[in-house]
Length: 68
Image 1 (cartoon, rainbow, N blue to C red):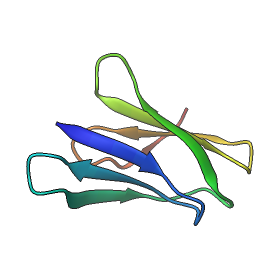
Image 2 (spheres, rainbow, N blue to C red):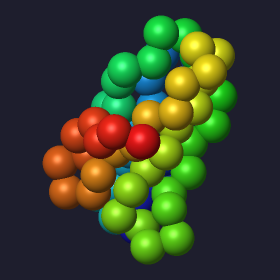
Image 3 (cartoon, rainbow, N blue to C red):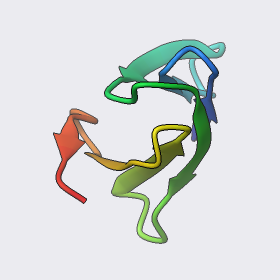
Image 4 (cartoon, rainbow, N blue to C red):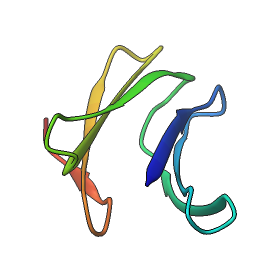
């Protein structure tokens, strides 16, 4: 199981809850605090939105950026 968290330092993070809470990926790209992060219903994409009013999407596997 993976857990996603938003932070005020311009990043979001994904942690693998099955690996003693080891951080798996950092999601970057915002120019201000990240306010919300959510998995899509199929679990294959994470969406983030921040103070910069931008929506970012990251694809499962590499969790690299994807155009929203």
